[in-house]
Length: 102
Image 1 (cartoon, one colour):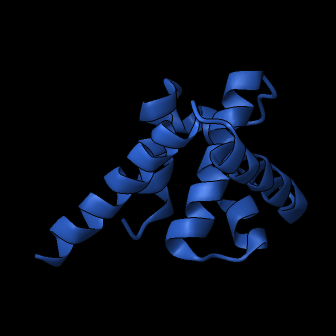
Image 2: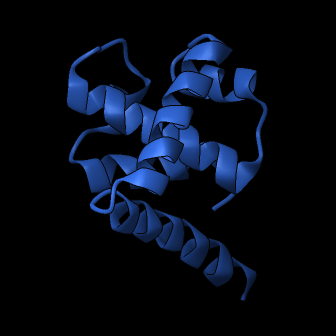
């Protein structure tokens, strides 16, 4: 998966929200969490700089993207129930990249 829109769409599908919600202005908890997961995954998969991630997530400041991704990274390492969901997303985004290469 090389496109941010594809990663955002995968996160949206997994989190039960729309891609527009992730890039929108909502501060509802489950949407903020999905946005944070998207920031985390964009950084991991595309190795983007924080300002580019913030821009892709609706024009957010780079520090918002960094804080959200840091929170998800902490949950990934500390909370057993979060890690499988994030691994599933990482696998789903990697699979598409592998399929495109063949």
